[in-house]
Length: 203
Image (tube, rainbow, N blue to C red; front, side, top):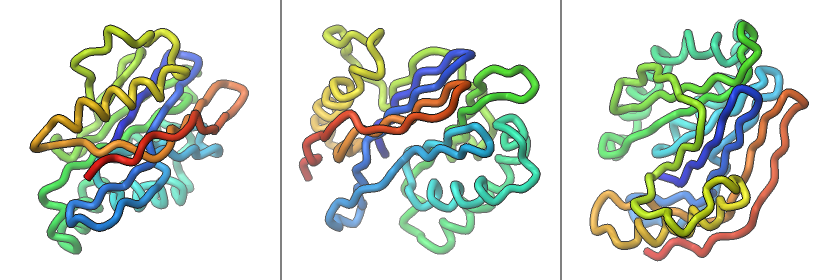
């Protein structure tokens, strides 16, 4: 799992992710990008849970010659995600104890507005519409001391609070660390930058 923060409205989407990879078998942590901009589709793909699914899905989306926008990708996404997840589970049995969620954000050619969708392994990758506003994954039980209206400036603060919360869990813990990476899409294009480092998650 990962930290995934996103804000969207009709005109823009801002996505913040950490970069820590945590391996259930206890291998040393690694680092990876968890949100990728795809300029020719004017969209951003993000993922939580299985890094293997996210990395393979990025390749498939980028290779699609028929897709024009985020809505066209959405129309075809569930079935190949189901097939890819089954293939990965057959290849790596340990994945059967993991979950994965893929997120798509981008401009709709039909409406001219940002559209967002999620696809969860627990829901067999059915398409789910994402409402505008701020999303925080994993949810914070207490965010009273954080000015959420300042997002993305508060992304580091949110992730630090998430990490403290998750460190207290004995099971189903989300590991958060590395650096805070921002992907920002507006009508004028993409901005991609780092907000700074997080402490390496304790093991």
